Image (cartoon, rainbow, N blue to C red):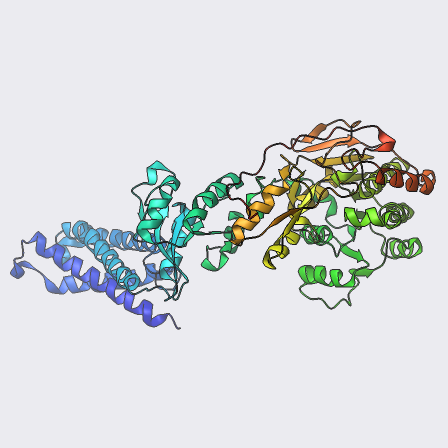
Length: 616
């Protein structure tokens, strides 16, 4: 075995430690009078201990490569082994001491000497090995914020991995109890308030945030303190991901992103407790190639459905989703379905053949300014397309139907908002017709979704172009894609017929603050240009319609509201055209939902703190 030479040497060293300890124990007992020592019984004891050390050590995996050298795990395994062998030695000399002409105190003296010797040898070797580690020539001098379990493990990795690109030069920790802490020869040099002094003393160029579940407020403070000092901020993935992979690795580090600074901690909706309705069921997702649809498919697959049917008219999007789910993009399996929700006949055929039991309707047109130019397209996809999917679902008696909506459906002022509001009302009507949980889920902007604001800002900044913001005071709600999909999945477990479920989105965030932060993170000199609010666009989005109650019967962060039902036969295309054309001629700040009364916009709420100012 390839570990035999290394651990064979360790075993011989441990046997030598026992021999030294037993001989030294007897010499100490006789005050170093060599003539009183019975050497032959002593050799027998050493041989017996050597056999026991090998057997017990192998049982404890001490010589089988389980423990990294010089770690606490190895110390624990070694201590257990020595104690077991020591008990056997002590019992032997207590029972047969006279026959062996060996003092009974030998056992008591030899055990601690042997253990200390073995530990000392391992410590000396570890110190020697670690002293040979050298950083790569171009390694960044790195500070680690957080001297806890994650931080100290990261420091060990930085210090011991060959050619590592980060070399630790100190900890930064706000806990007063850790001010004198030192781990892996790296000490805590102060708190975040001392960062300027620490950076100057260590010549650090990077600071790594190694705190479990660091929130946006803490990350914002670190970024604000590190920016003026020229320190590059890096962060680790969420702690559950780190523990899932079993270790903290330098390769896990990533740059601080604007998503980390939006001021909204991730919300756990405890979806695992209510998503049992997916297990063993046939589940169909429309819009499976989109940002929300693909993440939905990924999360649904964790609950082991009998069949996951991914439907979209975008073959490239379907391929991307399939790669994430199945590990390949062959597009030759029955789980991917190419179809358009505008085609009712095709939908009914697919539903009759596949017989889905749960449907998530994510397919939609979602770009507000595009639909303002082409409102009829919004009608065809978001209104008639939703009606087509609902009719297909009713035709095969689907048990659960979840329509994915948007906050723009509350007090709608745009084509997008009105079309999604109609989709919510159609879903409510179908739910009451079938008596089954057909409901909608409403949320705000999704961070990182295809075509959303953050990827657009990122591209403009990367290309050195001006960042366009519609209005200095415009605000929006934000949530992550996984968070949005958790809400969607949970809706099927806690929602009732005809309801719309709304996630507590926290405080709305000012878009100008986000633009400034992203420019600051990039380190570039980028101009911000205000373009003015677009047709149908609100200054501040809302989550609830003026007539909707905010009830939270199941989850403190999820609201339930009733939606007025609308039969497909009551759809009025001429009225739709008249309404959208009327609102297009209203002043931009005065656009109101014609069919539902006036709605009051919510206040901007708490803003993301920003210190840097974009270039004029």
